[in-house]
Amino acid sequence: MRRFAATLKRDVLIAIRSGVEMLNPLAFFALTGVVFAIVFGSDLDTRQISGIPAVWTTALFANMLAMEGIFRRDYDDGTLAHLLLDKTATLPAICAKLGAHWLLTGLPIGVLAPIVGVGFGLPPVTLAMLMATILIGTPALTLIGAMGAALVVGLGRGGVLLTLLVLPLYVPVLLLGIGVCHQFHAGAVYTPQLVGLFAILTGTLTAVPLALGPILRVSQDR
Amino acid sequence: MFHRMASPEHFFAGARLWVFWLYLLGVTGLAIGSAWGLFFVPPEKYQGDSVRIMYLHVPAAHLAQMIYIAIAVAGAIHIIWRLKMADVFMAAAAPIGAITTALALISGIMWGRPTWGVWWIWDARTTSVLILFFLFFGLVALRQAIGRRERAAFAVSVLAIAGAINIPIIKYSVEWFTTLHQPASIELGRNIAIDTVFLLPLFVNLASLYVFVAGVILANMRVDLVNRYQTTSWVSEWFRNN
Figure (cartoon, rainbow over the protein chains, first blue to last red):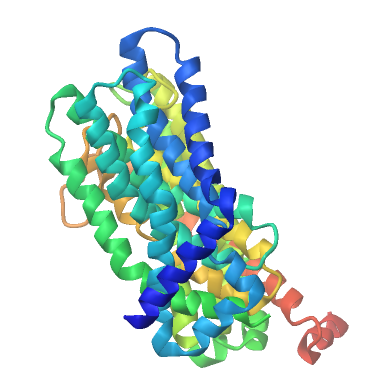
């Protein structure tokens, strides 16, 4: 637990002190969202219907762009090697890194989502649902993306490759998240999709932190 | 037998005749099955002649999933027992899987137009098979991006196992969701919803594609083995003798 708290604090502090870099995914999210809001035209129905997937997809891309950096700094300066040396410390440290990463990207993206969604003329209740689903979905995205990032860490040109690896695995989360919002917006039953979204979250939350240790360890023998 | 085939040297030598016979049997079977399906089966009552696309579409779609399952199992075998041949199999089978999936998708697109009225719809079945294609592609790309073989093997195994979640999604996508794609007509322990006239060439093609793909993967594995073990004495000896 001490290790968890220490790593969490360290990662958050590094992000805050590195300044604007932390805001890059958020700026990307807001900007891309605005571009979609501009190009979708003035018909309110179309804007509302296409606004939900637009916000969700840009949130997903913002998250994915941020994923690449989750282990890179630690890999480059050797911190990762230290975290992996002590096998009892690996799991709490990895959980802390995942938590910190979500606090710094997923959470602010979720909070920002209703603001971006306003640009599409969505009603407040739908905006609240949009925020809720993004807040449920982004931890799952972070977990899946972390697995991809761990596979390509230290490879140099990891960015495009990471997209290729994780995007297919992201699709179910995206479809379920959009599904919940659409059903909710139309006043229909949305529980099945919501349950699916939670199922993916709990599944990845259980499996991924355990798998990350061995995956990262392989990246160490260079 | 098993432990002998797990050694690269014995596998390389032993697979040679297998490749020949699998190719011969597979190509002959595909020729017979396709000719049968194209020229001797009567047109179907509702779909007319377009039903013949089935003889390519169904075997390709089935094989694509089977190849992925085999790769995921090989990934697990590689992680648990560190069998060398498991990784050789994964490397050889991934591109074949991508091609097979592409075949299933393309034939599906061609079948969709005359029967559904659209080339493509974004339903659960088509989307999950498209994702399968990108998973195969990712397996190939990841292996190429990682220089060191052991690390590449491990990374590909992890990705293959993680992506295996897609297989049950493909399987049940036509039962869980309402969609244009029909549910499976052939299932073990259930009445088959296709007339025998249409069924026989389908089974010939399905079995032959299994055989043919097995041959292609074996041949691919042999090439990969020469690449991997080019510095060992058994490879240079083999080249001297042939």
